[in-house]
Image (cartoon, rainbow, N blue to C red; front, side, top):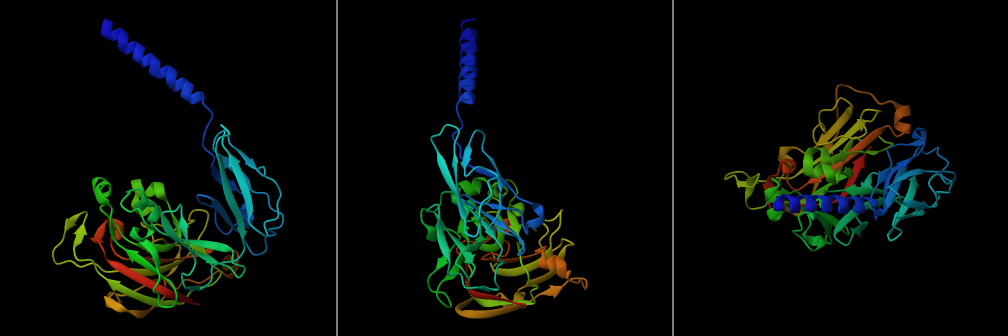
Length: 361
């Protein structure tokens, strides 16, 4: 009976503390969603750690826009959600937590410009002081697109304390100026326990879903950004060196050798398809054309070597010019240091360098 009394006292204490905890003011200060008129959008708003990009049609008057935000419970925002502002230049919003102890600033941009067809990878920033993020700018120097990678997922493993140790990083000695270095990395003890022993270096047009990378890695790739041209081919320069030991789910596979991959997919978006992912990137019926390097092109080389791959149109499809103008077609370019890295097969230290990529259209 005495022990039962102690147990009941303990449970009541836990319940009491949990009630107190639930009544404490929220300490989070995040924007959870952003709503604008769907008629002007080319893509759903992109919400990142400290910025929101709203891609809109060229006819949009960005001098008079009033985005509406959903915040973490109890938080407030300034300027107020729904305030009409001039977005000719990015606007800064400040979110304050319910407990008034924390603030977070967001740069909110309305973007009319679409991505260009030339990629030299000269623009890069350090995200959260941890890893590199490549981005594209318009003629005025405004950021119009971040290249995505799996770096944020790799960061959860804690296996690197420097940007150079991440799978995707800048490379000072590019073909011209700076290039991209993609390296297949070990994810250490944590990755091995989770059944994800390697992380291939990758770079792609789209967004990386960090939550899905843990539960369903193939769904973590949100592939595609709106473009206003129809690509015919892609060219660029690469170097490649395979890592010494090829593994599948952490088990060495004698006789197998790693290789790299580059591909591009051009597709139509609609109400049911906003982006492609790792499960349908080559098979979805909305795909218009695909460009893939061949097995013969996947060589090892220590010299900058040019590649060219044509886009092959599927099933004699045709382009709807009005949809193209309205931003209803999207494109993704994908580069990876291990062709089967999305299923955790590859060789640690496999390294792909890329630079001066161009889309012919």
